[in-house]
Length: 190
Image (cartoon, rainbow, N blue to C red; front, side, top):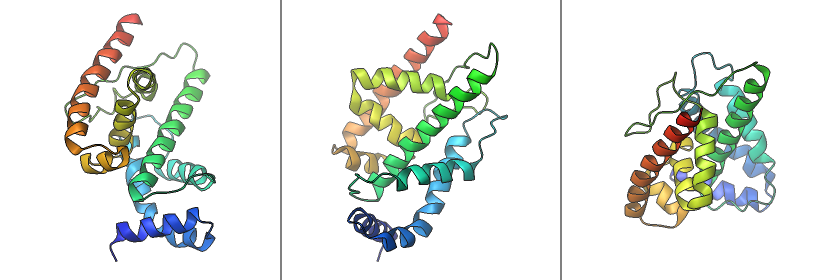
């Protein structure tokens, strides 16, 4: 059986209340959760103190606490995991910002592949922009979250959102331009 199919079956079993499925699931998803966490933390400033393992464990605890979720498949699970990691990083950034006197947010710059320089990344600026985008176009906001924070492919993102890969490609292009503009506007206001 394909690993993706096995993960999906275990997620469905876990949703149905099978705790043993959770025990079998963890080894299958842990490496992928670490990859997602490393990718997210790789865009943080060099002096970031949150470690990959801490981010994975915090996300895992929040995921396990999701009692009302009916997991559809592997992509759905990792989409929620990406959202959890985003929330954890935003909460962490806010708490760090509050502890520093006069600490201002740094600007985020988007490149073609959304690879952000480790010194320029700022989760708070991105979160503000995504929150604004969610008010205007929730699907594009969710798509950016899935692709950027979740590391999902175009095809996986399309499946989670129930649209075609072509739609995701178009939305990806438009959303990147819109986010860059929004972040530039934030920069001008500061």
